[in-house]
Length: 219
Image (cartoon, rainbow, N blue to C red; front, side, top):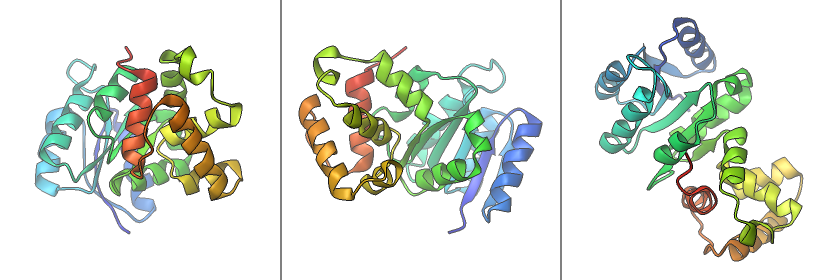
């Protein structure tokens, strides 16, 4: 499936590289802009399937990209939003996923170098899924650790929980751990039980529930 993409990144070379990467793999970049206002205008004009945006953009280089992304999610809920950052900023992850994790992603910029992983995240977010950087997930889990609940998890359940929080489906977790789908289902059920979270068939809702339970409002 060919995706229609809008890119927002103030570093011209990185923006050009993203454009080339995405187009070389069969997708269409409708616009590539350098600030939050231009991003909002481009989305209104092109109605893309997914937006790829830096969190920090002009003029203050703080959270302009994130604020634009949140506005896009409000105005165009069917448009996926994949945020990129040079640093792990968990408070921004929580703001992005707050209320609904569907069609949202957060990756470190270094992850773009893994082309398959980046393109997989792009497609997953465009399809309404979730994509979270493994390092961001790990930071959230550590920051929000609750001894009374996480201590009960086995080492394998912790692995499954991390992959689940990244946005992976049960099938994706099974592939990553080289186990059967049935084994993953048993681990997931056990995790929900130990964390006091009701099982849910919606991958996005379960990601949001786990992150909120473990990370809360991380700063």
